[in-house]
Image (cartoon, rainbow, N blue to C red; front, side, top):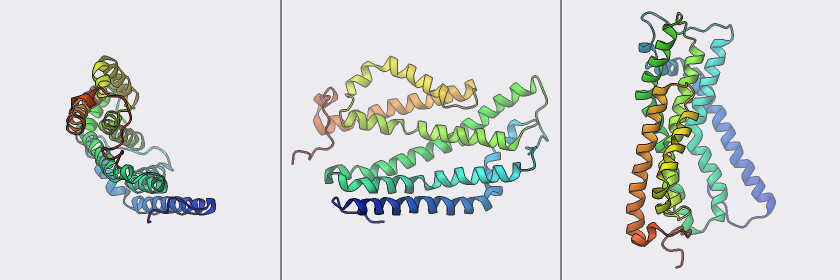
Length: 261
């Protein structure tokens, strides 16, 4: 849907908001229906990194009569929302874009693309490296005291939460970059407060890993530290290129080079 004009009557603004919300709701519903019929394939894909951690010959089971429908619907709506997230964010941004200046709008599309890419990179990283290690640790803890009867819904829900958590965590470089480049928080402040930031990231890592596994926590913490330092390195290059080294300590808000033009 095209971007509306900056000035419209109130009822026209409300009409545009209704249209954009309708697009979001209909898109999510359609995607959920499609994903519901695709859930057998999705479950196979999600189960691949879990099954090797289970005792040999142990299947994933469903223990309730409505369990099959519940997990298929739950997976379908979660996957649908994740798939539609770029479109949802764009519809929200497009509603507010008319209020932005032209030199501010140029940041919107790159931000949307970068945020989407970082989220999916984080989710894929979790699927490939974190999920196998996390479930191996969790299953080993169970087998030491009891027989494992893995519930499909429980295991898949934990896996999806892990993937979403890592996807969100991988957005960290974007926040750091904009906070520093726009001088909301000076680059020098990030550097001088590194001890507090490192401890804060450890707390966040523990908070957003739902399995309480030290393996997952350490992987999350290592990933966040790496992303944080990489984002600061890129931020330093951008600031020095635009403003020189004095820009590393300035605290004023500056959205773009051509603000004063």
